[in-house]
Image 1: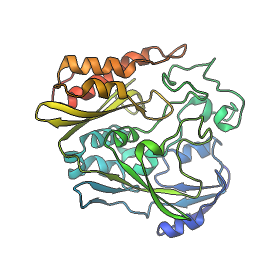
Image 2: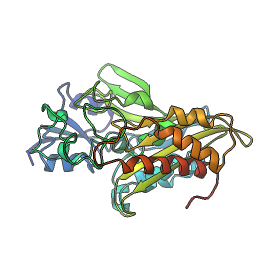
Image 3: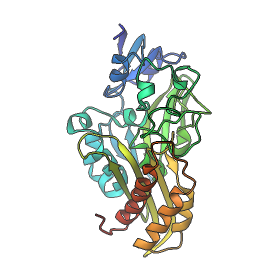
Image 4: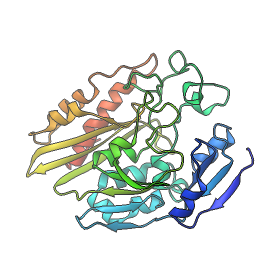
Length: 327
C-alpha cells in the first residue's frame, strides 16, 4: 500500500478543507470497507485520507414527517432503527442484507452509497480498463457473467450499492457539501452513466462530500426490497429490486420500481411502474410488472440468466410490499 497522510476531520468544514480538486489524490475515509481494499490492490493510491467518521451519524425526523439520516450512520444502526424499519422497510431490509454483521457495524450509509464498482477488471491493477484510463472494456470479450444487462456501455459495470436502489425508489434527496457551500440532488440524479462520467459513478466533485440522505414522508406508500444472491452468506446481489407503492385502499395509484446490479446505475423500471398504476396487488399484477421491467434487457455473452433473476426480484419485491408471502 502506498504511504499516505491522514487528517482527522472534526466537522464538515475541516473535512472539505482537507480534500482537494484533483480526482483521487485526497479521499474521504469512513468505515473503509471499500477504500482500503482498493488501496491494497493499488487501484486507489491517495496521497491523503480524510477521516469523516466524526460527521453526523444521527437519524432525525423532518418537519414533513420524513427522516434526515447522517451519512456516517452505520449500516447496522440503520437496519435496526425503529423509525427506518417502520416508515421505510425497503431501506432497512437492504441495510440488513449488506455483508456480514462485522461489516455492517463498521460500514456506513455514505460509504455504501459511494462504493466503487466490483468489476474484477476494474479491481485488478493488471487490466487498464476504460474506468482507469484504458482503451477498452475487457468485459465485452471476457468474463462478463456478473456484468450489466442494461445501459449499452461503453463500460459494462453494475452499480454495487444496495442502499442506492431503495433510496431512489423512496424518492430520497442527497445533501452535498463542498467549498462553494451545500446543495441537494435527488438520489436518481446523483448517479450517472459511464458516458457522462467514465472515471466516477456520481455527480460528486473530488472536493465534495455526501453528508445526509433525506427521505420524504412515506404517506400511504408501501415499500420492500428483494435480493437474489449466489449464496446467503456474505455476497453481493446478482440482481435486486426495491419498490415503493403509493396506495389508495387496495389499489396502487403510483409506483417506483428500481433494479440493482443490472446496470451501471440503479435502473429505474418505468415500464413496470406504468404496469402497476391503477392495479391491485396480486400475483398476476406483479408478474406483468416484472415482464415490463426486463423488457429491453441486452445480456452479454455469459449473463443471460440475469434477465430471469431480475424478473424474479421485481415480482417478489412487489408481492413483499403488498404483504403477500413469497417463497
